[in-house]
Image 1 (cartoon, rainbow, N blue to C red):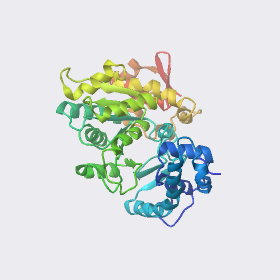
Image 2 (image 1 turned 45 degrees about the horizontal axis):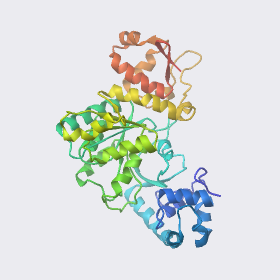
Image 3 (image 1 turned 45 degrees about the vertical axis):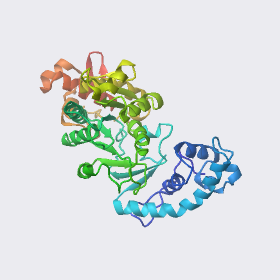
Length: 405
């Protein structure tokens, strides 16, 4: 029996995608008329697998919670109609170098899998790494207004570049304004960024960002969508897309959002439904462009942040909560050779130059002041890098000192 937690072994076909049978079946369910993420979960909980859903009668389908007779009829017919559409969709994926990842597969992002309405399938273009530390597990979303002011653009670039240099993956929606500034700054800082599209990969939106998306792919980052490749952008898809931005991230940073901004939806999803942190950057008190940020801060729905170090401090507790004994535990990298105290290469994989310098300087436990003198780095930089290294279980705090794990 196929379940979400037990994907079948990948069965390679003749396509470039070599899509697993597990992902194929979930795609068929995804393409079925009348089935969204919540209904899909209920069907799978009730019947156990897509194969068993296919064997179910229309009457059986109607017994599923919130699936009445009319919806059951649509699903029963839609499952049969979707079979041919699956092959057409996979052919389009091949043409665009897009691969399909099904919920429950090892390469499906762990953070995203934890949200209640996680997509059944992801269409991924570019690199979505699966590493011992969870790949993009240490990610922060940066979102805000499409009609950003010069202040908003400047701050989005400042925060994104600093957080990317600290080793965090920057997640955003590829939209005009704050999203674009965050993606560009992360790439300039030679960091990773994930673009969550609101449409299919064959319909890049906004069109003027086509070059930015190509640059992200060339730099080893990725574009993700839950929509099949030829789905065109439409207003109702963007709020749905926001849950993926939140779901991929440890926390969401809102930079310059008016009171009716879609960024506020992302922030509230992060807190209310995903158990993630929301942070907001204040603007001028009389700036309509920052009204939404001020509302979140005033109501206690988002933490006030003024620097990238504030963001890292906010994320530290969330990361430990989410990964204690799970992803962070797996990242206990056995990183120091017991014989001579040298750092194994696995401990340094994926770290920034300053993070590597810090790990190498910790041949013995040292305080921040000692590390400043030894490395020449600023105390703020050391604190920022130390937090990321702690999350990755490369170093730990021992009283006032830092030491290797």
